[in-house]
Image (cartoon, rainbow, N blue to C red; front, side, top):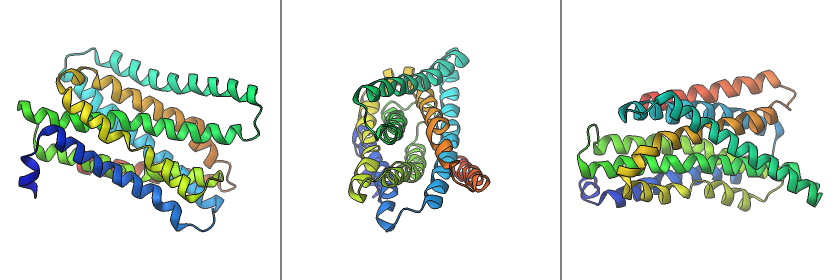
Length: 266
């Protein structure tokens, strides 16, 4: 099977690899079907855990490779990464303010819940776009025999991203379920956040030589967006629980688990 896969075009390889990563996102989102009732302590613990996962992923899966890639491309590393990171956070900040303004005009009672759901979906979707591109670049570079480009390393990257997509899928579907969405809708929006990966993987593979120049910016951009939503929504929401210290511990555990996965697969 591996031989047959290696004979495919890099674009098709990237697409298949990110179909896998999307399927793991869907698997994570499907966790909502296993809960008959939404327990606040459990949901807050999972939110805290997801916050830790996202913080770890921001560095180990996004910032760290962005730094290495920027150095290889002879960029002004600190400037590119800083601008990308700040841009990701500022974009969600602006979107948050625009949403608040529109919410005041509509005067809807469920605005805060809808905003929280919107931030969760948009931030993780933004995070998945450069991840898909990263996989596309990894497979696309195989056609040009670039230094360090091997099929095993590209597959390892797809596997690592796929594993971290499981908690990301649940990080979207579980809060949506908590806000009153049906299990079907919560699952749909949870898996939808990962569907951009196969699309962006194909784009990355097709434009590998050009996209490689802006990939450090895109990776750090996604990291900034993730940190914003963690600080703005996930951690504050988990800390509304009476057992705040326990929720903080789940955040640390989430960070540790994601760190181990990234380092072990690195």
